[in-house]
Length: 126
View 1 (cartoon, rainbow, N blue to C red):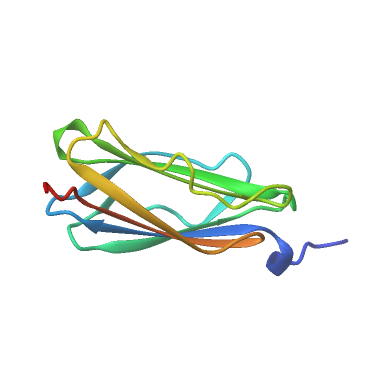
View 2: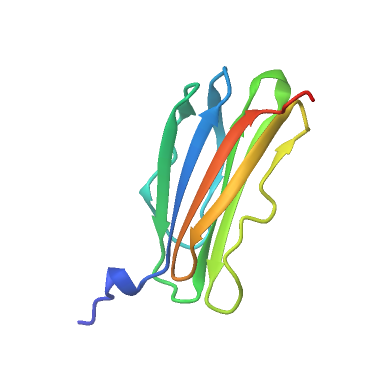
């Protein structure tokens, strides 16, 4: 029986930081092709950071979508995708509707083992 080497399987690790003064609450998560290694936490307290990780046996790649709610009806939507035939991306990550929050993103590593960082904070009023 052949077993797949987990090191060769594509993976995504996201670090999400809540730099607001209010909690963020998980509303939805989608992982169409893979499994959670570190599932998303149900909430993030102010100042708290969490790492979410997933992997897939599909050597073509993996994508994740997480949605956390913020006070005032806003939602922080985090997207990460890394595929063999394309680029690693956080495109589509956003705050909806724009309610005075902003999300900053950074990609440290790309396919096959993507690593990205997200930080949600209050928008600077100036």
